[in-house]
Amino acid sequence: MKSAFDLVIRGGTVVDGSGEELFEADVAISDGRIVEVGKVTGRGRDEFDARNKLVTPGFVDIHTHYDGQITWTDSLTPSSLHGTTTVVMGNCGVGFAPCRPDHHDLLIEVMEGVEDIPGIVMAEGVPWKWERFPEYLNFLAGKKSDVDFATQVPHGPVRVYVMGSRGAAREPATLQDMQAMTKIVKEAVEAGALGFSTARTMIHRLRDGRLAPTITAGEEELHAIAMGLKEIGKGHLQMVDDFADTTADASTEFEMWRRIVTASGRPLSFNLVQSHSAPDRWKHILSKVRGANEAGLSIKAQVSCRPIGIFLGLDMSSHPFMNSPSYQAIAHLPLAARVAEMRRPEVRARLLSEKPEGMSAEWQGLFCNAAEMVEFAAPLDYFPAAQEKLTVRAAAMGITSLELAYDILLKNDGQGMLHHAVVNYATNDNTVARAMMAHPDTLIGLGDGGAHLGMICDASIPTHLLEYWTRDLPADQRIELPWAISALTRRNAEFIGLRDRGLVAAGMKADLNVLDYDALHLYPPQIVADLPAGGKRLTQSADGYSATILSGVTTQVNGVSTGALPGGLIRGERLDPRTR
Image 1 (tube, one colour):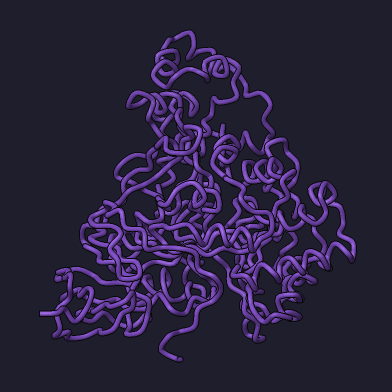
Image 2 (cartoon, helix red, strand yellow):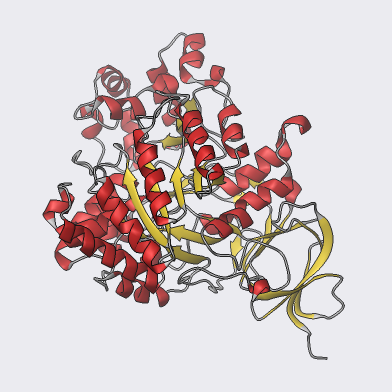
């Protein structure tokens, strides 16, 4: 008998992405689309038993940096290990197109400094088979992957392409420069980029300390580019900004962005975190965002469901002793040899007594302030109590925080791991993350997959959101599961204009997860050496993903890749197929 459908998922509990209540249903798929949701009588060529499991849309991650990784591999891990079926890259004004041949090294330097991707990895891995942005998209269109991927046109490469060394040196753009940049951005969005991204944060620097090319770009330049998007009637704006001037009564920087959105009519999203140095600034920013949306504008803040911090270890990008002279003398050794050296009492004494060299006070605060760090090991705790900080533990042991950090790093033959929560954790609990997520004008984002390879691994945010916030907290503290699934799927998809996904409904794209909800479990990050030039990166795996399905094709079963690569480039926005 001929099968009625390509795939039928039987008897699952559907969390459809709308935010509405769960319901029992079968889901039938044909030709990459959901064709029935309910009691499906026809048979599928393949059938999946989802009884006692959840069926959700595939997750949509709107903040990644897979711009490099997609050019040298077909697997966008770790995102694809956590139910993500669509990613948006080209965030924060950094990327690899457009680019003239003599600017390759400069764009690599920017990406290395801003996103912690080793320069040698990009020098060997990125093929540079393009110059203009449409040529870059044509190259990407030839790539297959285990997720769908879309991109934005980043301001930094555009500025350097037009202005050369003047752009890299952050000189003001002339009228001619602005006209040329606007033309490039319009061309890129017409060719399929979802929007335009930029950065105005002082932490975006090259390795030598120079600010990234976009940081001080003037309002006139940003306005011109946004008005170009208005002319073509498509494309969103994405940016990261310090908003350092924001107080309860004033915000010159935010008002600039409000003027740009008002004039252009284009939606804007931006990264929002709680700074420990200004712990209430995020509240003031969100109050201004609320006012803008009440006035009819479309502005959203991208937030995380947990503290964002850095992992530190002897086999990672950073740790408290990395710039000590005695460590530099052994840094070239294999890990086992370094561990053997560090276990020698005389080496230990020298490393604990030496001061780091060649580090700014800011970097020392991030990488060497052991007192604020915690040990990161199973069972994972992204919201550790204040007494877990090394300063408290060390005091109870009668040693210094730095001594305790040293001993932790040597655990498990040098695989010990520290974590320093840099933002969203000034209160040492989950209250800030909860409040940010609950705000009506925020989106779950900031996973940063593909970037910060040796110190951050936040592509696992979907798993953490479901495991911690909807299941493991006491019942009266949990976030509702339908809301969480909607936040990971439909809300993100709609904002970026991909309205054909993020919902379990007939006619929608068949991107789905089958979850063993009770078995969801996040493992500690680990280092793998699978990058070009032998480069290393952090990845993170999870249990509970019984199946991930992209365009009706199963890509993951129980956390193991099937080898199928149905994903590819998304060119431009997508209409809701149910409204055609």
